[in-house]
Image 1 (cartoon, rainbow, N blue to C red):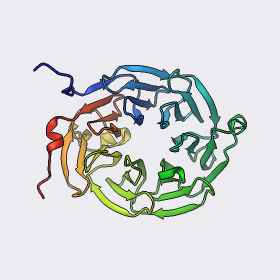
Image 2: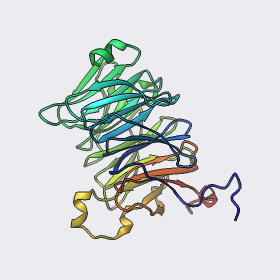
Image 3: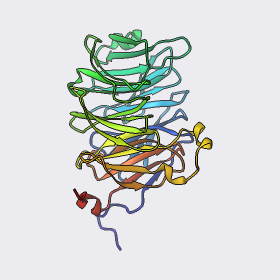
Image 4: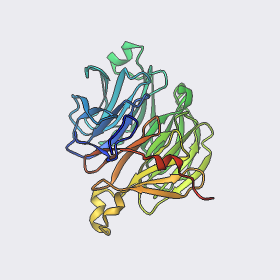
Length: 334
């Protein structure tokens, strides 16, 4: 079969640019770029259409835990175990700002305007977990390394966080399974929910920011309303869920998981534990699995056009999978 322009590649595209396990992957808004960060200090950016590497953002000296890109793909934000959060020029790879912290930076993100950044730090070495907010329009904040708002999280550290709609609050997931909305203006907790029993590993919003999905160590992923924190749906599996994402065009969610490396030897060794799993968002039914990674899947992301998705694994590879035409015609029998 000759591949015309319209036919998606049949095989997954394999991105080999990291020497250690992938910690997060993220598409920019248009979806032409895919960012990947890993435990090997490197942040990579790739062309999502063919898997070609565009470049790297070099400077971190520890594992990079998180990455984000702003709305118009101008700047990139990374947070690392080297106790820093860094701002980069997306196109040139130049480091624009270095924000030093007392402990590892676990989550980071731009608000919708791209003017405000948030990042959370780990509770370690006697230091508190903080959620910090900087306004990039004020160079003084960057220069003095003084966030305009810093919220201490005394009880349970933040393990995942995303901006809510309109940049009014951040939705944070904690190591005890709790979800909180923190106001970006006052720092107050606006709403809380506790539906998960264990650590929240990942939070991703829907494309219109009305809903988010949380992936938890309690073997489930759950769908919530961003504004009210009402719990909408639950997707259950038999092992910890490391990451989950919401399709922008279908009523589908994809989940990735498996045991952590340190727990692998104590359980059965069937390779199929490391599949990406697809669930119908309305019926909460699993309808498909995709094999590929040699080890747990640490992160998943849908392309903004919904025609492909990517997964990053403990094996250090990122895989871009294009859906075949049957996927789009698929209907679950009610």
